[in-house]
Image (cartoon, rainbow, N blue to C red):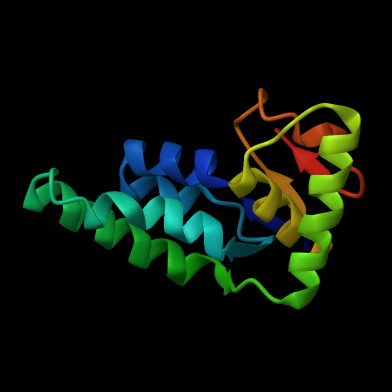
Length: 133
């Protein structure tokens, strides 16, 4: 049984396919939901420019995700790992998005594999991070 942190790209892909696709998730793994990923997937449910139906679909999807993955809030240790990753990126001259670094830091904290569809994010070059595409 493995520890897995699906990033926003994975959840968004599942959302676009419909809730039925959630059944396809490997039940042999334990899934974790970083606070930042939850914020990214719940945002459309709070967007008043979207239709009520779209917002409700997103809310239902977010609720389903919370039933499949354990929510992980940001804590002091995750903050320290984030800072180390941010310094690594600055020193290497390869900036990353703040949310990507929070997700990576949470994965490292959990000693979990980051599952992503985003091959452009450069996750594989971050020290201490295990990545699955």
